[in-house]
Length: 93
Image 1 (cartoon, one colour):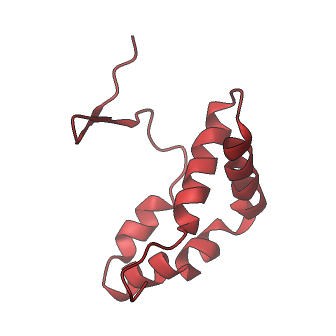
Image 2 (cartoon, helix red, strand yellow):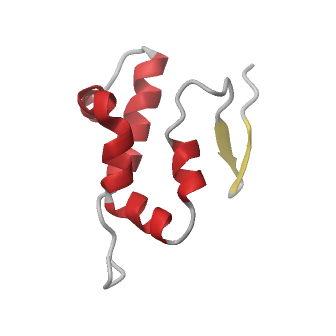
């Protein structure tokens, strides 16, 4: 927001819901809500993401390709892992 405060990020909730849906595992209440939001939005995800505040900001600032990339589903078999403040490739045991 213009005042520097945090705002709810629809793209984060929907992204989390997409990952949770793909994992197909037991879920707590928060995961069920995120998954439900993703499933409700999945048919119109492109329009929703492009019209949310962050999507509009990215497009306006010249980062539409980043939005295109963020909208891709099932394109990678890897997930990042935060390790010591940096992202690293997750190595399953």
